[in-house]
Amino acid sequence: MSRTVESTDRSRWSALAVLCAGVLMVVLDGTIVTVALPAIQNDLGFSRSGLAWVVNAYGIAFGGLLLLAGRLGDLIGRRRMFIAGMVVFTAASLLCGVATGPESLIAARFLQGIGGAMSSAVAIGMIVTLFPDPRERAKAIGAFSFVGAAGASIGLVLGGLLTEAFTWHWIFFVNVPIGVAATALAFRLLVADRGLGRSAGADLWGALLITSGLMVLVYTIVEADVQGWVSVRTLGTGAVSLLLTLGFVVRQARARTPLLPLRVFRSARVSGANAIQTLMVGALFAFQLMIALYLQHVLGYGAARTGVAMLPSAVVVGIVTLGFSARINARFGERNVVVAGLALLLVGLLFLARVPADGDYVTDVLPAMLLLAGFGLAIPALTTLGMSGATADDAGVVGGLFNTTQQVGGALGLAVLNTLSSARAERLLAEGRPASEALTGGYTLAFGIGAGLIAAAIALTLLVLRSPNRDRKSTVVAEGAQVANELPAHAR
Image (cartoon, rainbow, N blue to C red; front, side, top):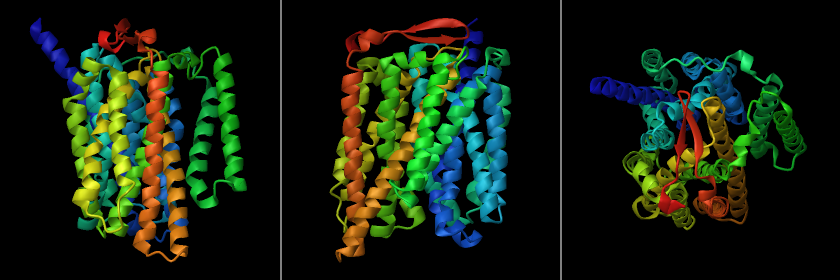
């Protein structure tokens, strides 16, 4: 009997490793392209404005399809959706690597985004059902959160090394053997689930409304930096996105089988976690770009050196999420851990808001990198809260919602802070400031605004999650059995 239990336990953790490997590949691809953009531009003849679509095409498909992919996973089976997503993503990576022109690369990147959404949307829902025990689930979510948090930084390192050692093509080719191996292991290790079946209702109108709305929203955000935030195009597409989203909400309130049951928002923990994540990720996406630009354009670092310089953040996030987050959450409660993590991030961004043009990495940058340990504290706790309203029937779509708020928050924060940073830098240049001082002035403004977003997230945590005892039990059904997930007594 003990051997059977041990075997089952080992298979669950092996399945978690497969899920993490698949999602890591998707997360890496979100940033690995960044440092290779100049090489791609020179080789394929991209215009300056067209080059942005190497990133934007992926983000629009990924962010727009997460909710739909999550719901389809609930209907047809999450294992099937995850494997299909891996196949699409791997094939698209090969197409990216062999692209010979701007149009073919952008199309392949859009296809990559579709595959990434298919696999990422259902992964967290599969983890919830794999680990019904609260303590084991906390450890599993910690590992999964590490993949998402550290993967972005690792992508910068890997992208720089591959581009300098080989060519930009290899930032995509490297996905192919990993994707093939992960897909093969997924067939073997992931337990098949039948799903609810198509008869449970896919709400095609709701899917069309929210997918179109999210895609138009992400498009509006990424293009606002070029068109201007008050331009006719930005305001027009923003209005279209708002109308589509409102139409989706109305549809969900009336549909017999809604794509996203509005009941999940009744929980302050779920709604609050998604809103807090939006603010936090918005600040940190911008931080990641701005600190990379500061290292390269002000301190004169190359692509590979920039990636290595950002590696300490991945290390501390990994140590916290894998080594401490589960125990800390159990000891102090998710709400208190979120506040502590956000406080560390606030100090780090405030520290960077005074970085000088002639700064030194060890004294002016490294301390903030280490303070990113706060993200390793906050994101597993937020993930637990964000999934607390999920059941076996809708864990996929609730996971898709959590991933969607992350993507939209990141895109919005990056676009807004990048626009404000660029405007300040141009103003300082017009005043006759040296280029290094002008650029630094723009970056420090972005860091300061990012600190403001984190402060707002702290306030929201204290206000919205101030009474966790009102929502003690989160209904998480695993394999048809309901599990009551009580908050620790000292956190009530």
